[in-house]
Length: 276
Image (tube, rainbow, N blue to C red; front, side):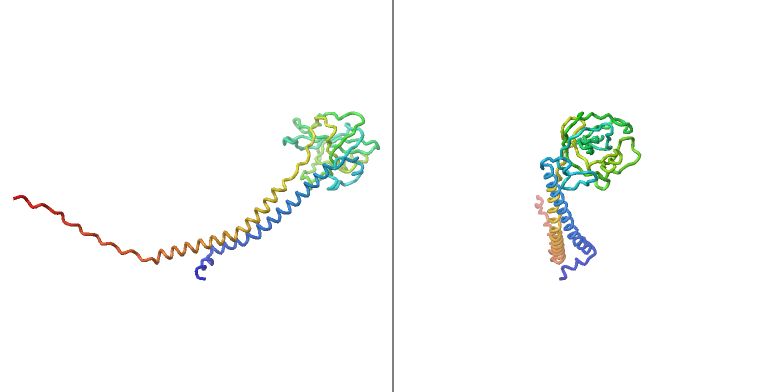
């Protein structure tokens, strides 16, 4: 065992402790990536199922005070009524597909029974200072049937957007059916819809929710576990190399030295006898 005594040196003790700590850390990171993969896969399946479900009247999924659930989110719904442009608002600091900052246009949609559905009609650019109410393209006039994706009320916790107070008139940060019901003095259906039809070209329609890259998390999961498995093999390879290097150094020290070769005396130069 004497050849392993070098493992007790400070350098090797530190290296061994680091290797021991890395193994469970990498295994835990692999499990974390596995959970992210499962969450993203479930989310993608849920969104795909909702988007491909048969459209239903919005009243079948929402009502005043209703909290839109995960399974109801992104469901395509239809509604018939009229747009109330006199009381529409804009939602600040929203981006389009190209990353440009502007507004989302939120217009109350009065249903035939008098209830109100909040309709996010899409994105418009911010023109200059965001203190004045922007010019908004008019929606279809008169009785209209709209379709859209049902969405839950926005919150700071879910979106990361701070609900700033003291904004200019008819400008908001988050879409809340409860706050809109108080402002409008009407029965407002829970949540809101992102309008997908009829398509008018302006405001710019909000793009479909993309799928999250779940396979990337799966690849990271495998990668971390391979790293965890490689740590002991790497440590053992370093140990074997250290033993080999020490053996070679010891052999070089104990090898007999070759005797010095004496210098060969030079022969005197032969000279021809002097001519008589």
